[in-house]
Image (cartoon, rainbow, N blue to C red; front, side, top):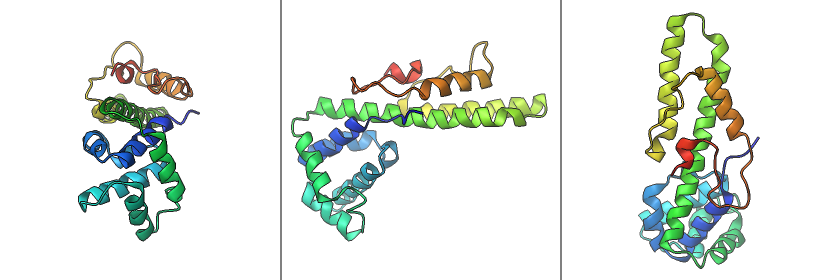
Length: 196
């Protein structure tokens, strides 16, 4: 099963922010810590958020200090990982930041959509009546819309001749395909997400 993430984009984005705080101002409105797949990346994002809120520099030393005080430095990969991130992203521009943030958002939405699809598959056998099916379908359609909301794109995944269960299984199979390593904006296989 694919992990539905773009670790390279997460690393590059965090490293760019550690090199230049102006990148934080570009990335922060687009992402939440929960959008990041890697736990240590979510920890680093929260430390960057705390540093920015306190008016501190967003450099590796300041972020390491926040993480150390919070007992999270080792969970975030330690000082060496912060320095490694910064060294890898010294070339970043605003265009890179936007591209990486879009990729991270796409994969976060794909993970949320996969979870909804899996719930659909798991729940279809529990539907007893047509009234239950209608209520269930409306609820799942809302769940899919919520999963795709960060992309600000409408979805028509649940329309057409396929049943919801068939659509959920198709989406699950598509999302379980591992991403290609050759493109930082790897396709998810779901047109509503990939068209961004």
